[in-house]
Amino acid sequence: GENVEQHPSTLSVQEGDSAVIKCTYSDSASNYFPWYKQELGKGPQLIIDIRSNVGEKKDQRIAVTLNKTAKHFSLHITETQPEDSAVYFCAASFSSGSARQLTFGSGTQLTVLP
Amino acid sequence: SQTIHQWPATLVQPVGSPLSLECTVEGTSNPNLYWYRQAAGRGLQLLFYSVGIGQISSEVPQNLSASRPQDRQFILSSKKLLLSDSGFYLCAWNPPGGEQYFGPGTRLTVT
Image (cartoon, rainbow over all chains, first blue to last red; front, side):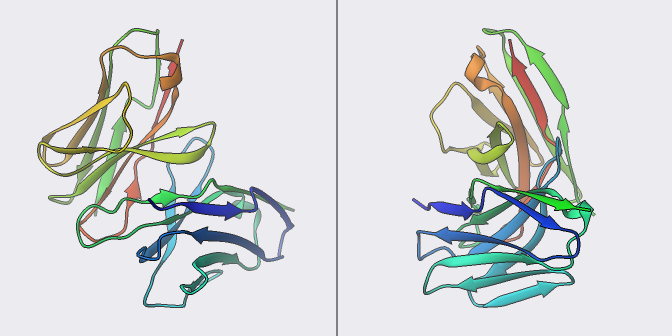
């Protein structure tokens, strides 16, 4: 089955700096890669996703890049703000249109220091 | 717009007692539904998923079971809880082939 590794497990940055979280996956058939943000005591919130036919996707201060050859993808957050502090999860799946069985990374605790 | 509900929000149950957690989705039809467990604030583990009424797939053999009695209702159950069943239980849904969205979760503590 799919295995997703995520690094780093914790990340502290100064407000205004950039943050980068990296994930690798094992199954070359995976074609969908979402990122979730989870605040304490809440359910994960989808913040951005990318499909295997795209190399990069950007949404305001958040961007995701995908390298299919190397089987890794990354989340980039620019101009970080204290409200970006949360646990971030990457995930990977193969979907043929039916159930989307996501395999999650172990999470990154991001702390943005004011 | 679509919304997903879970209840209860928190639950404290003794070892050996039964469990029933409920998840409902509004504003869509024929969603794929999922139950995850999250221990110690990290690592989401897929427990069950369903692509239709009465159709349940189990990812991890364990003390839990799931049922889908209606199109937009997903239930997680146990006949006898174990201490190891403690955790944060998350329900999620997606339209076939679409993005997956999570509910607010249920915090279960087994004492």
